[in-house]
Image (cartoon, rainbow, N blue to C red):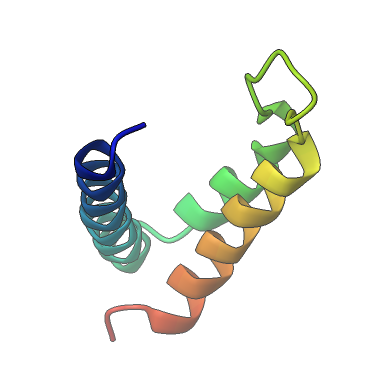
Amino acid sequence: MTDDTAIRTRQREIATEHLLFTLMEYVEDHHPGLLDFMEQSLDHLGDPAGDGSKDDDAVRAIARRMIVGARAQGTA
């Protein structure tokens, strides 16, 4: 991956995370239960890698931290 590609990938990831967190917080504030629903879905989440870097638990841990962060931040 070139430096430019890595930079754009990082920037896209930051923007996507921000928008996702904001959406999660907003929906949870207006429709309580979203974060519980998302948390219950994590057993179905996995890393699609087909090599030695595959780590389903790491992917789930990231998702759990995102849910915890959305719960803590909230919109109220």
